Amino acid sequence: MTLHGLAAQLTTRRVPTPTGKPVWRATTVRQLLTNPAYKGEAASGRLRTTPASVAGRRWRRSAGE
Image 1 (cartoon, rainbow, N blue to C red):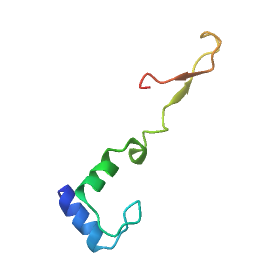
Image 2: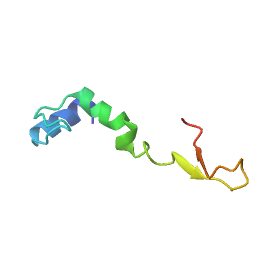
Image 3: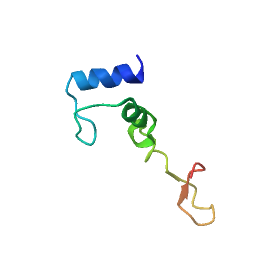
């Protein structure tokens, strides 16, 4: 299914967009599918525990930031 097809299905089923609009656009669907927050990546894995002997720090930021 294309992004346009998915947007049309959501509009037909009267599912409101995240902002409450009644009409879906392909760009809105693309933004949802590529947004790290909606994919579960935004908060997951940001901090990890490290041994206490590593420079006296308990938390370190992941390399992705």
